[in-house]
Image 1: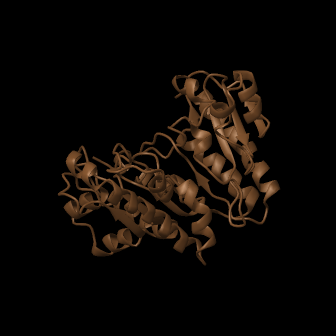
Image 2 (image 1 turned 60 degrees about the vertical axis):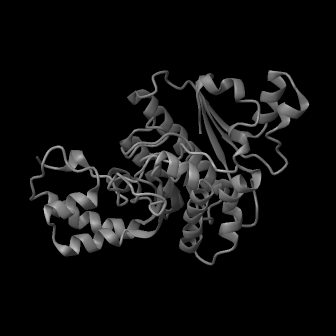
Length: 331
């Protein structure tokens, strides 16, 4: 979670810390990292189930007391974050920070399945944390984590950020995880037609993951149900999405499937010249290029499960789940 200075007035209220209601159950243990712009620091928290994110609202403490209440749960703090958001220096700093966090998690839970989930802005680059952790540093961090763990992550869940369903994202992340959740569309931006707290809770993955993981025999089945949460949320916003023609989709990708596809795709593009600029949607581009049928079959095998709102209204965009890797193509 990135906490920028414009959000600091809300940082001691119910903000980001209220996204997770239950921190630990028999099925799941949450750890939360926050990148604090105001203090140029990054903190890893191990909140307990007794932690009250509404403490500052209910008790009216001073800022110092509210910060102390939250920070008693910090298990690692790194100060001195470089100021420039998109700089190589900040990316290198964050790489070291999150490699340290990974080592802590592996030491605490060496036998558990580990997952990564991010809430914030996205973009189809293969980077993390609103592109503050750049592509190569993101790969290095994930490589360190999986090397220490001696196995890939279970899932990297990018179902919240926008446009993380890109070839570049999967090419960078699927080396280090079994499954990936993301979308090739801009996520969110709509309102529920009749908002209630119950509907909010029902469709929030951080809240529902405990139940989902406990109630399914396999991770894949659990992640199918996780993606279905998005469809339920679309249903609760049907009128708003239809009125604003807000195209929404969410995908569960198989990283084994992507590896098979990318191997064949890379061999194909090495011998092919593409028009410039290339079509945004990768499947449409391949159809236009009349690629061999087996390449389209391999593409389809990437997708374990998907949901969208195409039945609400006619989409203007052509979007089949994966954004074209423009910079890899020869023109």
